[in-house]
Structure formats: C-alpha cells, structure tokens
Image (cartoon, rainbow, N blue to C red):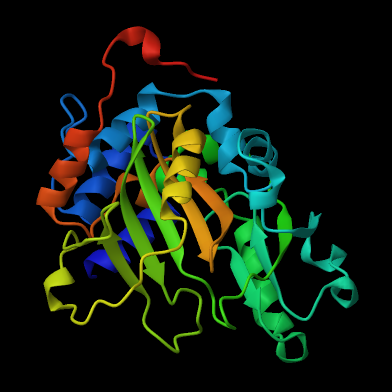
Length: 299
C-alpha cells in the first residue's frame, strides 16, 4: 500500500480517532515530517495550531459558501458576488429548466463538490448527481479536522457561470497574514475535464513569478499577465481578511471585473505537501500567532 492509499484508508477508517492524534498522524503521512504544535514555525504547523486554539463563530459563517455571501456583501458590496441562481437541499429539488445554458453547481460545506456546466444540452446529469450527492453525505470536518466545517448544514448552490472568453477563469488566491495581503497563488485551467493540466503558480504583488512549489523549476515560459485592477483585488483581500489571523481570499478577475470566490482559513487544511520546506518556513515566519491562553475562543 503506497502513501496515497494509506491516506485514503486513514480518512475513511480513522474518522473517530481523537482530533489531535488524527492530525499528527495525517500530517506525518501527508507532509512527510513530524508535526510540532508546541512550537510551530512553518505555515502548515501554525495552521494546525490555529485549528485547536483559535475558534469563533464567524469562521463557520465565512466557510459556508452560502452564508459568506452576506458577509461579503456587508464588507465590500453585493456587486462583487457571482449572481446566485438558487439553493436546494437535494439534487431532485433543482429545476434545470429554469437554469441558464451555463451554470455552476457546488456544495456550501466542503471543497471539491463542484460541477461546471458550459452547455446544458450536453450536461451529464448522472455524473453531476453522483458527485453532488456524495458531497452532501460528507462532513468535511473529518478530512482535516477543521472545526469551522463541522456544523455547516449541507446545501447545493447554483451560480451563474462566469466566463473568460468561454474559458473557466483564472483563480487568484491572495494569502493574508494577520490581515495583510501578501503572496498570490494563481490557479489556471482548473475544472477543465482534463483538457489541460491545472497550473498553480505564485506571484508577488509586483507580479514577479516566485518558485515556491517543489517542482516549479521544471516550469518554463510563464505567461500569465498581471490582472487588471490588481491593487483593487489586494484592497478587497485586506478588508475581507481583517477579522482573521490567517485567511486566503480567492477572487476572479474578468477583464477588470472582480468577483469574490471564497474565504479559506486553512489552505489544504494545513497539509500542503506541494510547497517546499523553505516556502513553508517563509510563510510561517510571516504569520504571527498569539500564544496566550485567552485567545482560545471556542464556540
């Protein structure tokens, strides 16, 4: 049994392990080194520390892809939200006749429960139903023990498909340390039915490419143009992240029109095995976490 098979077995079979024991075991298998939560120094380690020592109700609100819309509307304005087509408790409630030719279905409580439709006549309902219903049955908390997901009521959300000249738009993920926007992770060619391999690249705010992933040195001809209104995107990220010690603010930018994607409090659930150890240390050095006891604001 290889490492990936071990991790799948762990997630399915060890659901009822104590949270800290599970996290330490999963961290060792996924990241490849022991987890130090007594004196965390890397970003991955500090995100694990925050899971157990920094909890308050707003975290669950912004992690719910339906409820976060109100939070975003209040902070930066409704004009940054992708138009909502509806929300439903189960797949059978969806009236597809009322949906446009292009749309997106996703679940509000997890990561990965997403279906993109670019042509309703060719939409595969069987595959979509299987993916969505599997997601609805899953409590995302048990995958990485991120407390903010534990009590979210699963729902299906329908949103307008925002197109970048017919393509799925680039996702700009802005890392915010202690409310201060910093590095930007650019995700290109996601959810494209394997027609292209997804690309994940880091840029600084001056749009200089940074080799922070383990295999970035093998990537040639980096040609991702600087998005229009980047300064505005950074300003939005600052506003939306100010209530959190760490947050990643995900945005889209279609020819200067900015849309909100989501707020992620623990990227890769604090098990990011793609970045180098030096990157992990650098990110960790940027994040200041308080060690006094009264920071633990449990729900």
